[in-house]
Image (tube, rainbow, N blue to C red; front, side, top):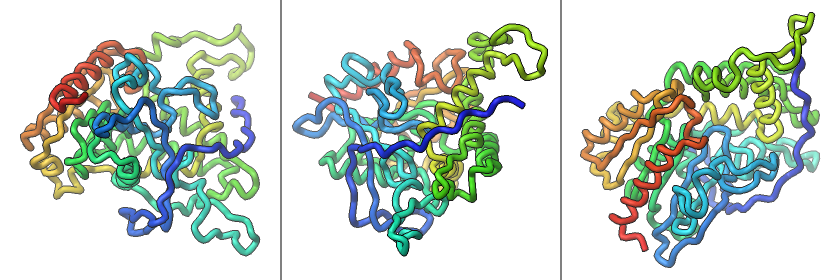
Length: 390
């Protein structure tokens, strides 16, 4: 058999910049959290008019550490190519904010958070929510972010930007709070999660459930982590983030090491890469959070929330939109962005649409893609002029 990823040690708690709201949060599922916390990071300075704030919405496996060293991995921030001085999201001009989503595992309220009425209270041990954490939606995530934005004294965001699940959040922001968003930039996203994408998520979830260390979602009680299942879920998902051309260019059919006599002794380089992706992921992500967030993406259907008419979600909107897709993205293909653009046109919205030619697949928005970076910078510069941003 192939070697399974090494089981990681349970990570020590990390302090996060966060705001807690004692009045709770009502969720779409009908449950109200008695208290909720939003962990976030900010870059640049908020101007005197509080008019230069850009909210970055992270993707499924991202978090708030956009442009700095990650406290768990020690790696550079996931969007350091885009956020920083002189970059498309220029922190010399803009105040860039990113919050860990509701249901996440990097400080915001989620499955790793203590229960409001701990199951272990009789033993004096506060237990996490775990698998019992309520189902959340993309709209719930945006509702939690809105609380943070209001808390910081920002009446209108200059822009909301996000890729993949972050793009779903950007669309939801524009639909739910149109007066609070001057510009929205959904990247490599769609107005609903397709059946194919739901199927990929279900493969990952079943891998987690099949892990003997899953223990019905209460793995922490035994000091366990369902590392094998979570690693397989990450491996399966990561394949969808790349294109066939990108995989061929990076790995081809190259073997790692020399010829061997065992069927599994030699690994193709692409196998080694996927195993590395899986084993590194389990060191920074919680399995119950993965289940919660993938389900939130599956539930997302903006048209269904507005009587089946996507244009109705943006009726009379004054928000300026820039939709970006990538030619080789088969997870969120260009046709889905075009469908959103057509709905925005029906709503008489101010909308631009750009398809970036690249063979890097869905992950192109995270990589060095000059045409994409120029698109971002140019659109924001035009918006700044129209908004009379200082």
